[in-house]
Image (cartoon, rainbow, N blue to C red):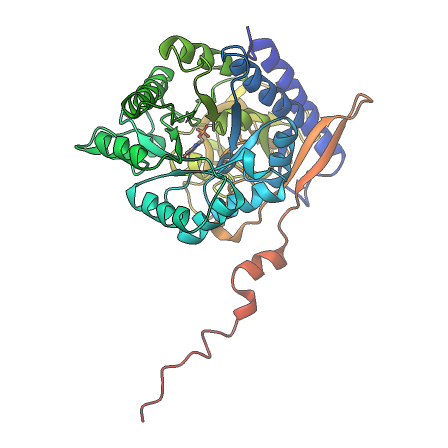
Length: 457
Ligand SMILES: Cc1ncc(COP(=O)(O)O)c(C=O)c1O
């Protein structure tokens, strides 16, 4: 059976502990650099291999399959390059994400554009490059019509539908609710007919896309979304009397276990579930695109922050660290939906021992809700120790939130150095104060004081 289980989780945790200690020893982390993001390169490679093996095990031989990493999950060029080297393409949802994928060397034929608000210029560029595009709505399809009339394109083109199968436990990341902003709402009156007509009128529409999962969505609901998409493709091809839709893009959305080091659910479990729930999907009649993000990266990232001060308030110990809302915005603003595990390390970066003490782990930002964890039982964090927020490789430290003009931390990949130690590679330099000033209008310091209403005297 494919998949990382308890033991592999323990191996990954041991790699993480080694990396934290090495980061302190090698000076990546310390009083002058009190926060860092770490990425486990071995773990990322393993996840990419797991994903490919899981689907290879269920698809008919010869089926074209593109696993396109959802760049939004970890928008870092070296990560995209690593994944590309491991056989994974890119799903992009903005001009910035497309630029990152291109900078990483992901070729157009391994890139998919999916955003809900594509401008005419974005569409033109994507079609000129030959990137796959999924139209989100009828107005966007009109724009693509215009472009297809004026030029030829190698882009595989499709429509995104929302099967409206319902949401999961986290409203903000549920994409298949009745009123979701994404795609063509398939159960709305007249929508299904409109989709069928759209394909009938456009022989160049050869793909169908849905992304119904996300954190908090049960696998059975994800499978239902895929099943409805498959059924629609069958209906369209049947009614048109030709196999016009040749590829199904089933999106991403595999949830991540934030509660322990175990990887669950696994890609293998999901692929098997799909093969049971949607017989025919993997039979070879359709090529396949997937767009997993969180499940590829989350468990391979750790943000580690120094405890600047350890204090007590109202009888509760509070560790004031350098990791808060700027690197964990979701957790800080919605702690119930996005709790993170915290690991305690001593000042030398060694796992901290000692009786569990209920304490708060706070961030550096100037509002009282800036807490990585509230009332958490951990070995007592003291000044000079380190607190690590685990499973933060996707949608966390790569998604900086500039509150208090806190600098983006440096991000480093790590792997065994072959001699019993840990080697680091820079993924992103820490942001400098000059860069913060520059992105905050530093070049226009006098622009407002010199702006005056015309003098009407
Ligand atoms: C169209 C699309 N594909 C893929 C993803 C990636 O989802 P996840 O990171 O949950 O796998 C998203 C996430 O928002 C998305 O909107």
